[in-house]
Structure formats: C-alpha cells, structure tokens
Image (cartoon, rainbow, N blue to C red; front, side):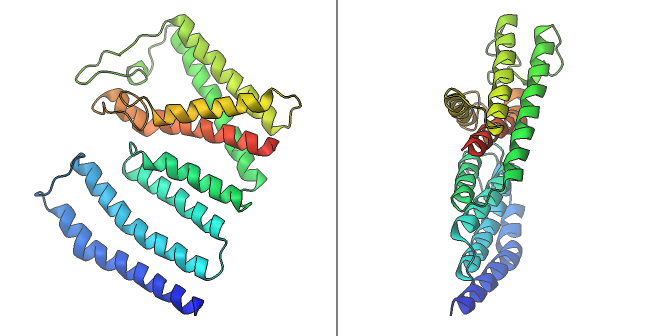
Length: 254
C-alpha cells in the first residue's frame, strides 16, 4: 500500500511540473498584464521556483512512504528549497530560515558526517580570514570594492555611515577571533569559555543575516542601491556561511 501511494505521489509530482510549466507557468510569465507587490523579475522567478518545489515536496513524501528517514528527508528538502529560493530571489527571508531548519533536521537524523562539518568549518574560517584581509586593506586606505560594502540610502551612492580606521580594524579583530574560536571548537579545545563564544558568534551572525529591517540583511527595505544588490548576492550569504561555520564548530565540539 505504501509503495502504491508513493508511486502515485511521484506520478502526480511529475505531471504537476511538466504540465504546469507548459500550461500555467510559461503563459503566465509571458503575460505583461499581472502585477504583485515585488519587482516583476523576482515574482517570475519565485513563481516558477515555488511551483516546482511543490513537486519536489511530493517526491519527498513519496520517499518517506518508502521508508526514507523522515528527518533526513525533511532536512534535504529544506536545504534544496533554501538553495532554490536563494537562487531565484536572494533577498527572500525564507532561505535562511529553511537552511537552518534543514540543518537542524539533518542533525536530528544524525545525517551530517564529520567531513561535512569540517568542510563547513574550513570554508567559514577561510571566508573570515579573506574578509579580514579586505578590511586591513580598507583600513590602510584602499578603495577596492568600497562602493558596494557600505549601506546606502535610496537614490544615493553616499553611504549611510563612514567607519573610521579604528572601527575597520575592530572588524578585523572580530573576524580573526571568530576564526580562532571556530577552529578551537572544531579541534576540541578545552576550557569553559570556547562554547559560549561560539554560541555568541552564531547568534550575532544570525541576527546580521536577518538584518535591521532597513539597510542590511534579508529584512531590509532599501533594495535599489548597489550595496543592497551586493548584500543580497554576496554579503548576507557570506555571513550565513560564517554562521554555518560556527554551528559546525559547535557540533564538532559536542
């Protein structure tokens, strides 16, 4: 019975994607007459992504009926959904929430191998050190990439704030400390202070991913500046990588 139900779900999912793309999605996206509360290119990509993600969810349900681990199935589905939404609409709030949900589900199913945790840790530490290097260069007077790393007001290229050398170097220190803490956790360093530092780093980074509701993060409202576009594509995902690295370090230390 479960196998028959799984087969039917797979058939429905396949038909839903193939016919839906031909009969619903393509004609709708070809029409210039409909509008929603987000830019039309975003709406087009999001509509197509969500339509096919429903099919993917049905495939996952079919797998669960066939005996796949539920936490692993849910975790994989959430991660694929997060990546898909990020690719379609980088500024959407759902992708970081789904990514965290997916990782938690995989962890609940003991499906995150040590090599994956180490890979995340190393990638995050490398990203932190690269970012620290850029901040050192900016503190020394370089302007490379500076036009896209500071929040800007709508209709202006002027940054909302201009951090001085001391503030820039403070970011360097924070990034290096982050790298040391994450590596120490991953290597099983003794001492009661490492884990609270790792948790604090994780919380701060997740708050940055969510943002301030105005200029930074997935919750920002100002989206028509060079910084906002770069933040959607690069800076917020990079902070998400650092958060994942902190979580991986904490998991390895457990």
